[in-house]
Length: 258
Image (tube, rainbow, N blue to C red; front, side):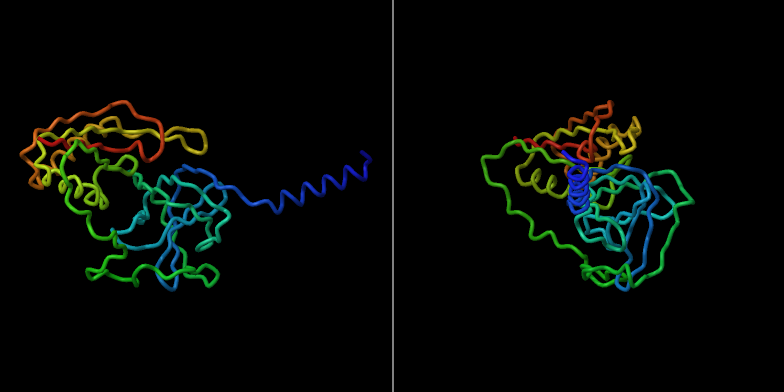
């Protein structure tokens, strides 16, 4: 191959790489949240390694994405998708899992004004301001009552990193209560877990050692406190931290019939 041919090939490769689509990237990192005002509702961003990422909008507790808190760092887990149009100036992280870290971080208080270049490209689920009883998201009618023959059924309660029950927890406890009452449950087995996550920079972040026990015992207390006191309870926990993503931070609840 001549020098001219090699040069032409190099230029062709460069052009190909420049026009090739970006690939989604799994990310896990700790950073400060950033809130940007818009004409509609505020949007939440974060920065990592010189890039800005979009997390979600300010909404209410019915949403999959619950806003973080200024004054605390956050653990962000999700898949960045550079192929999607940016929102509020940030690369979209699809279905992000955002956990508020417990320790205070007074350097994490960035608030950006509304900017015509960075406005939401969609209408929010409801207008800004107090909900006045109107939630942004509707998960549809509840499923019908279970039909015999009844079998043991396992439910999963997920958690934010290093967290206990939160705004989303009732959404996962209600099906447990409904099923246990419908089948006149004889036994409920609760098993708590804690986890560690490998961050994008190669380091590992582990949840507190006591968390698996606290999660399991708290779910037992909540179920009993809600009136589910007749079944026999068996409560266990796994002290060792499982490596993995958000699905490893959990409590499983197995409801067994008589």
